[in-house]
Length: 384
Image (spheres, one colour):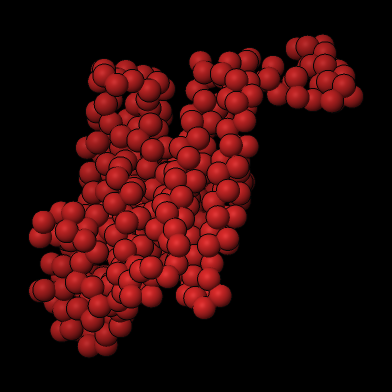
């Protein structure tokens, strides 16, 4: 993922605008900007290596060596040197501009390097976590354009957002509906291929066939929609929807639940349930991601439009002929990559534990903590 192109496109937008103030007056201006970029790149990639080692039980024996090489310490050394050089090159007559530019550089790093680092995690967790969110953003953009062209300002005449006057409420709502539809069917299709769902546990220059024991979310199962969902709607309406089962208590016994029988006096209403058979659980996850792709990710594009409007730019660059710079294509993907990483670690990933990892952390304990740990292990052995 060419992070340097996005960083260059964004910092150059402000750099070109104020070039007359920078040229021959502020020493090492561009140098310090790229030093901040190198510092951020080193920190994020080293952090990715550490996370990669922690998430793979077969590589836990390398944790001790990784920490011994003081990767975090070297990253902090780069940060300290760049910080000192940046402050040392500030000029009294341009201090306000340089501080504004420093804040702009840090913001750009947060938008590019800070968020795009999670794309690496998503790729190694399984290509579906990389390809699916990209397709959701593309689908949202396409359906929003289609509904905007067909129905724009025909039902809602109020402007959607001032940063992008061409955006309409009809396009925004239509993009959401279309993205939900695509997420449901596309995730089901992708879940059938192991090369999409298997995580990669090694770094290699050569391609190889992926094979793994599938996570249960990629296998068909019967899912039950929580009954609390149906309490938000009238019971008469729920009974009209096909597939929803009206569960009742027999003689008010909470331990005996059966489908309600119309007119049966011994049955009292309990709650509704919906059984979804032959459903891939990843489809439920995809619906959650589609909500983010529809309601939050587009605002990354609105921010990019605002930046271009502020500096009088049509495109951030010419990296892709006819489509502008890389930033023009990746504006919504920044937020989406971060969302997928948070979603995966919150709802999908399980903590990885191994003997080398436990032994490594055991050696870091104090003597009193080691004694307490061994005592608890002995108690566990006695219980079993």
